[in-house]
Image 1 (cartoon, rainbow, N blue to C red):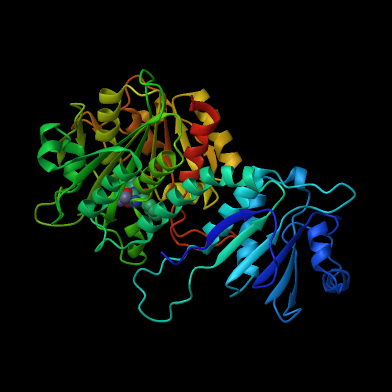
Image 2: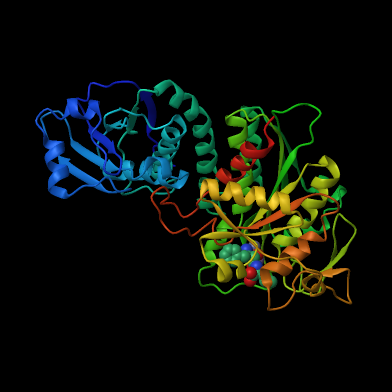
Length: 494
Ligand code: BES
Ligand code: MN
Ligand code: ZN
């Protein structure tokens, strides 16, 4: 990870070093603090010359306005009452990006006008989140051309600094969860195998989670034959990590998150074409989101009981690898005909869902997986696919998605799609043909859910190879962490 900025909140600042940023709303005025700072009128003149209206995301910059300051930046924040969370995140990212190499950045956030107002505490914390997420850069393996500059200092000046500080405590925990997920997705598979990934899960004990690592002997004794069949061709052993956060009442059933953690997906014997195959180091984006979410919940001390279960395997071709046509027995007892060894994620999730429901009897299960290329064809990189047996859970997820700008789009499940994965040779087969590939994958998963509200998020388009935006420049986006954290915060905290 690149050096992240240190973020703080205060009521005032001497404003005598680094970059000074003033926020101005649409058709708004400079705040009193900004006016006091603008003794010589540079800001007002620059605003006038540029025709600045305070439109969301607009920036006016004055370089080296005096001997003490690097630059003076006015950032438009649009219509404060209408700004969504995504708008605040983007402003945060914009502030970070438009203050260049300044070692310190002081942001005057109070808004001018007849009645001076402050942006609310949560919006301030979300803006801070935007700066932190924007600052992230994966440089773990760069030895050259990498910035050696010390961490930047970012200070938000606000009349409600203590409320903002309190809110930041929560959002900072969530930001760390997002960045953990990004780091894991970005890390290549020669550094991050199942064992190393499991160690990252184990590290959550530091935050107060209970973490169990199930090794191959244990997985075999649990009869997780579907999950183990995916790892059969790997030189490295499979792992399952079970992370438990008990922040709620002892008697409450937990919420459960389940993640596909294929550290690399070659396709196995049904090998993938080589073009772009390097992207399959990110085929653990679901597991990364689950560990990131557990990190977030624990770090911010969420008042909820939550379980995170991730299946960590590597899909490799080998003399020992599973073949097309092989039949494997899942933990549920259902036999699976493996038509295509590249449809491996569903085999991993089949055993995890069965195990999770049986052991924890959760309130619901949400699984996340980079499951199908077909979801990219359908939705591109904006929405993740949502599949569910429960309308209430679906609505809650869609709401959390809209709140966090981690968007979901629901697809149907139907008995007619389910038929497409019937086979004469076993209880079910692992592919359903050319059509409706994301849906038949979800139908497969549903066969391993007994009696529990369940949702499946196909994040193949959103977890990796993400288009750059104001608050993400990283290949691995960390998609799902803010979403699931918000689902919990909206609906399940006691
Ligand atoms: N991990 C892939 C899906 C994927 C594709 C993720 C592109 C991210 C970007 C998954 O294991 C896979 O290979 N799915 C196959 C299923 C098919 C064989 C039924 C697919 O989508 O082609
Ligand atoms: Mn695959
Ligand atoms: Zn895969």
